[in-house]
Length: 194
Image (cartoon, rainbow, N blue to C red; front, top):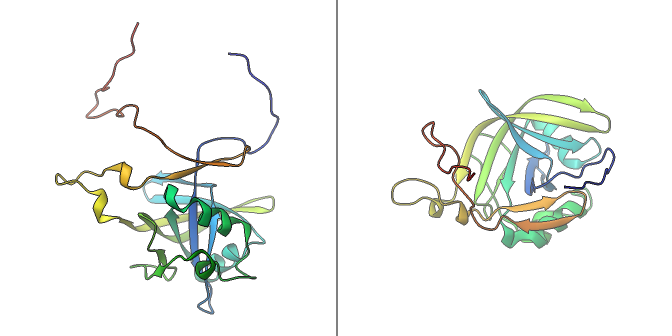
């Protein structure tokens, strides 16, 4: 496969599209679209979010020590894009985007009702990366849409319909169809063909 060198940049995909909700000491709630988000540890369960130090969301997380990462379903692509372009200092993005904050169970920052998966985090550490900070949040609770569970108790990922962002080419996509199962019980579920 012939390849083109792109140099150091942020082209890597897919990246999850999330809405990070935060609250300041004054009680003001803010949301911002973030795609530089991911699970970075199982013990303790930890999520990392990279934010520019000039963002209102970063300021609020530093004030209250908590945040919620809300998975964005493909049906909210327009609202997510809007929340990534506007500042919470200038506009109430929740009202403008028609999104509904609901109380979290363990942190002060709210969940977004329209999100099928919400991850409550307590800020444990941060790493300086130029104008950005990698915030490490210990996961203290996860909320998943009830309709995502089958009768046997397993989760049906189609209900989440996660929106992903293709960084570098600035496009949103859904995930499409399942291609295979991962390893299960120590055995590979599909074998390579010779």
